Image (cartoon, rainbow over all chains, first blue to last red; front, top):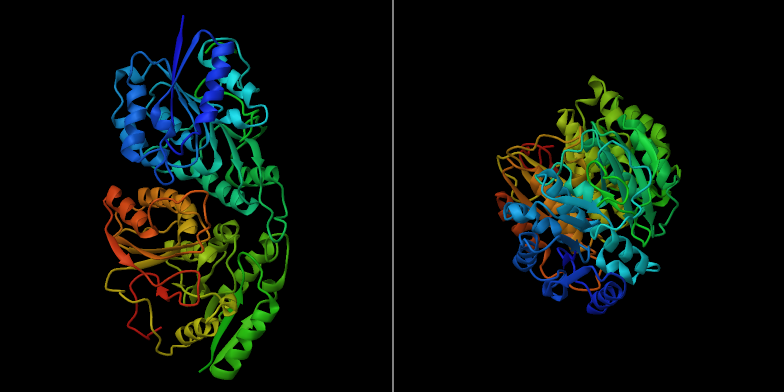
Length: 276
Length: 276
């Protein structure tokens, strides 16, 4: 049975050669997968992969298409929050059965979908992650997952509901009308290219907004820019400190981040391993 | 009558030569002002001007001192949110009569004080702003204001209550237990050294949290780093766009920012011009 996966970019555009590389890999290794990169992925309008109405229309086009089994986000960047409210409002019943997979800025849409219990949001590699060292394996992981082939998920998922976010994305979602209710959830966070003082500030913000969660797990905090002075504590010390201050359980590390190892984390209660 | 002003640093440390320059200016021009830089200003502990307990103790020491008329923040940086909750809890009745003046990261304390209606929070230059082009005049403005000499405030203050914040600082405050109720307020925001996509993202966040304000005025968005592609709209277009999306009135520009022209903005209803 063919799994039809449509790729759109709610934030920044995807380079065509990266789409081509994903298509080549899929063709060689996943005959059961039909991949369709929406032309919107390649539009460049200022910062974005097309203006808001173009990105919104592309998302709604694939999400509402009964012939599409899964929506895969091509790139993160920034921009999903500009269309997410209208996106939710424009989804019909055909949007509900499918998976939505990506992370980073696309986490805004995953969060909004999860808030409204539409479809199956999944934190995991973007199509554009093929550019990374080991990116082929990241793409294989996604294609296995979306086509129902057994595949490893984030380690340590248990019977508690889970959600995974980029730290900045979660901080900006917090308190907005896109924010899902994460009460009782294990919340995984990761960050890239932020100073440790900014990570500390983000933890102040999110821990204030996450009262009632089951706990926080820390993914990778990578590419931290060098500051004019050392911050004085590590990313894990920061996470532990703010968890302790706010009475939230710190539950250890998570295998997510802006890299090819970025694990798959289905939002909610994880299905059995390998059962997508 | 002498005005006794105490300077502390809730975030990053102040360089001693900058304190010396402020002291020299005050001695030459403001004989009615008694300036006291708390030794905590000069401590360096990792990112901060002393660890949390040191910065907290210094703030409480001067805020609770009946002999101190005003607390002036020496530097911003990052760190006020780490002590602001305990700071509020530790303030006694002597804290109430005085002004608290600064901006940027120190806005976290101004916001928390304002939430609890303690003292008179004022957005305005930091002592460390003496380092800037025109910094002498910024320092004079503060010393005039705090010593009751007539001085120009932000233009356009009217009979509506007002508050002014750094955009990131406000975004991180939003929804936390330090956030003041800004219903009916004109809210002024400024930012420095953030990409325009980040400014856009911050406006998404704050406009969601500012329902019920009288409107937003935009200060300077300065030192915007060059991105790999142009964002596609200006800072003012961003502010107008998010105000329109959220039904908040956009009320024009404001004369605040990370520069020596950064205007004085008393929180709440502004006193008559020159009446501190």
